[in-house]
Length: 258
Image (cartoon, rainbow, N blue to C red):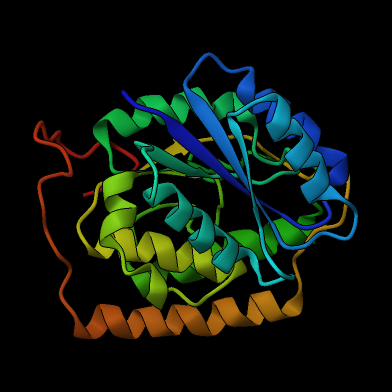
């Protein structure tokens, strides 16, 4: 894939992770840049990123006034990317649950896709250090979401993704209101419904190294009703068809959506 790629990383109190994750990404032999979208972390995360940006122009910071949620952080990052010259835009967590070493696999996969999803359930279950209760909740949420939305992927709630810029440019980002799990479900659903080629690749997902998970009951409840809203959209609207965002369209690959 030619052109630069931008890794969008939302943060809230990630001072213990942010320096390491930025360094790990920038060590990769690809033209990568990073945008950290920080929700006014009281622990100094934004200041640390700002200091890194002074030393390395590939590091960018988008400060927000307060804790506004994961979904809106990604939307802000996508809009920032669309105003600049990036060919591919990634979603990635700051806490090393998403391995930066997998980024080259995404870049390879997106040569023949429009959206690439990092899947924890494509080849069995590739999750490390999760308690059984959380694993069952996640696996069940994916099965439930897949059934109602019709999106033929194994991991609808994962947050390690890559998009061609043309995909984000076509989506109406202002209408995406959901957060957390439901944001990931809705975004993939919208891409698939517009006929973009969605491809899954297997990843190993490890629980965060340090810090506290942002998961809570509100996020789980929101995901439940958002999936029903997407079901109604599926029921009463037609899915678009297209060849590709590129001229050299390729046939769908196993594990991806046509």
